[in-house]
Image 1: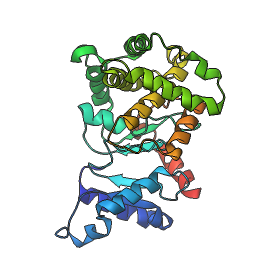
Image 2: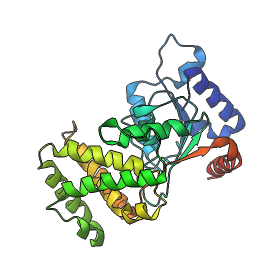
Image 3: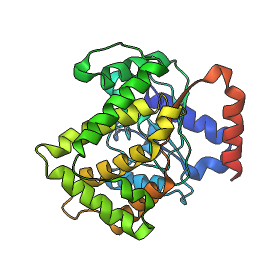
Length: 290
């Protein structure tokens, strides 16, 4: 994620220079037009092509593995398999939370997302979480682990209270074939309540955000499966009650089941890139060799 289109293009050129074999598996997603510099033109795509590239990027079997973005694919774009995000762009508030959420998704045996912060966003993230998760927008602007656990428990209880009258715990002992129909019933139960969609999705988003700050604690591990279930049901509700009249595709249904089976909620980790540059280089080297 870069600060300008020029930086995106320069970064692309440098990566390809260093690792020519990545040329076909790396793309830039940015706005542009015919009046832009010639060097930009190979990276400017129409809406249809951008949609195709989005589908390719979501497919873990597709060789398209690296995308360089500038103000695109940060909100409303969902790629659960996305593992690592490199940020070199000032961000704060809701925009930062949306960006972090790109790697904070359940996916098969994915254990956690990695945020490589090149610009120093750690404090901004704490501030954003303080505002995003505190009821009514009040509370501390930065939160430590103990405060994160307290907020996590608060949001979890809000969701549990909403599920009063519907025992969802049996799902954790069900067969794979039984899980999705059960989740659909759970979604119907929620949507049957007054303003059920809004009352469920908002605290699930808040719970997911604060969970990522304390996912390694015992308190978080105790509710890990519940959080994963809530995320899956949230996705079902968002799809079924959104603008997609066709409902969920078979692929989406299967993915929901796989996400549930994974029993894991990813933990987005903010790192100091200057202190871990060696590890980042090693990760990139391993990625290129696959």
